[in-house]
Figure 1: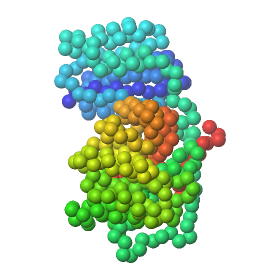
Figure 2: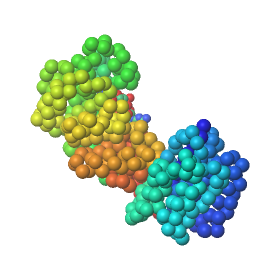
Figure 3: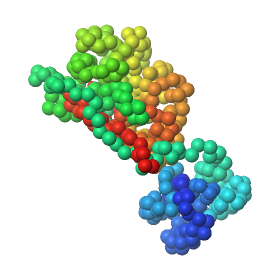
Length: 406
Ligand code: C2E
Ligand code: MN
Ligand code: MN
């Protein structure tokens, strides 16, 4: 299958013009042999390359390019498919934006193509190249958030002599995972994640509950989460709990029950955040929004969970603005490598900033992901990088520390 792949990367500052010519010459021979077209734009600091050819060949080539030490921060901007080649037998062409004007480079690229009678004007490739050539590079990724400038150090957050083991008769347990402000070393909240009596996942737990009792069960079990929270929350920390939206739409008096549970545990509604994922269609929209209003009036926080996945998204946000949005892990995984995820997350961040909504990135697993997210101004994180969820307890939290020598 024909594929077109575009990446951008930062050219190694030590790479001289002559070396770039050698690189292009080597690639020309390799690409010709494999019927791959490579169009390489260079602006003195960055590469922008289009590769077109057979999918497996292009993927193998890109995997090699990724680890080439002559450049770094390789970000995939586009991978798409087409019935026709845009560029026939072009081999490898270099366009030097330091010495040629933008419009003449774009014209040259267009003239290389026989795509649908030379009709490349509106093609996404041309748009991406235009964007690359015309951007004002006023904000290079700050060197401060280069992953090699950081390491992790574990610190015991807080220890209770007698962490409450789950009572034997309890129908469920909770694991706790911190949401951290990584640069200041503060825990902003803990999320209580349900576990079965034997420690199984939420899916295992809910599989033990009859379908018609699911909402009642979800609501009742929150009392255990609040009771755990009341024993471990420290000043300024909050507790997040998850609820199926159906609980809020269809269990009569659900909000009153929650508030009563919170108070019975000796907590205040302001210390609690209710997280909702739209894993199921919300059948009674009006009842749902009435419940959200009641939560607001009672004083708890409200978060849209898994934002950007499935149904959890814009329609809900347009109608009701939460205190917090948690970006789904699927958008965070490998974000430092994906131009598409970067564009989406940057626009979510801009939207939240404009609306005054706190943003949390979920599922952060690597320093590379964390550095990229910090560099665009996201400051709250949840993920295995900092801490895994721990049953009935809080353990060590790993904090990023700047390497003094760098
Ligand atoms: P969630 O609310 O999005 O919670 C985060 C999930 O991501 C947790 O999975 C957590 O263990 C996992 N996670 C956190 N950091 C990372 C990471 O860096 N990498 C990876 N791969 N995973 C990470 P868990 O505990 O299995 O929970 C799954 C989902 O079950 C939760 O997703 C939530 O939607 C639901 N859930 C949990 N407790 C409850 C509950 O009491 N009621 C309801 N209705 N749903 C619950
Ligand atoms: Mn959640
Ligand atoms: Mn989530």
